Image 1: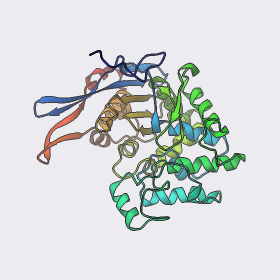
Image 2: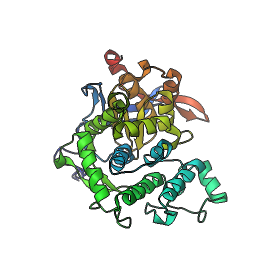
Image 3: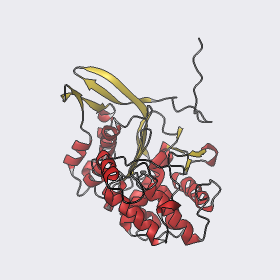
Length: 353
């Protein structure tokens, strides 16, 4: 039987093309599994200092794109406290402080939860889901738009629309002025060619625009460096809000929160299907995609890529936090019998600063 044709290809090829190992799962003294993917690390000048696979392959950046979406909203007149701006770029756990923040965003423009059009879901964090079931803040105990992890972004989108006088009933249409502004901002900050951009619908119902990993890293380089290079810019506002409130971006136990707590000034965002992007205050940046979509290897890859970008040498960094982030044990009988390991970890000694 002939092999099935590869799907998801573009003019630049399939995401399967040129994929290379990013991490391996060790159980005992054998490699049990391997996670393939693509990765790029940029130096402060925007030059790739580490590449695995092909970072010019177009991918769906998923929620890693949220800081860029937030940038577009700020440019369109969104005004919120930094803590709530961080929530606007979040894939939050649905903990009580997240839900209260979403209600604050909506309340600031006179809207209720019925204005949200994101896909109803339960909180990501199991304890938060239990708390919601036992004592919901609004509505019933089942799946709700409020508790879905993108509700902060959707609340901010609605607030942006009202700031501009745009229709809020159609804010999820790709042709809506807000989504056109997001699309333009994605193209500008990534530097990707418009010809490789595709449009689809993300899990939350919002339009999603494709990028390359190289372009995604460029965008995070701009954001990460903005507080020192252009302190009054919207880009700097995004970076300061996210890095100062990592608990709002993820929540208890989340690797994106732990990474930003370990590295002061880091702007990081996780995404579904194994995507990640991060920018450092000196302009170094990274982006990667785990090909099988698994979240298991993401923190290990992130920690190694941050070290490759020089994060361990930045002022105020907590090396123990990076070590903990990159420690993912493989369990047997309830105890560690192996580990998940980044396989490119020995390839970047010369680029550490």
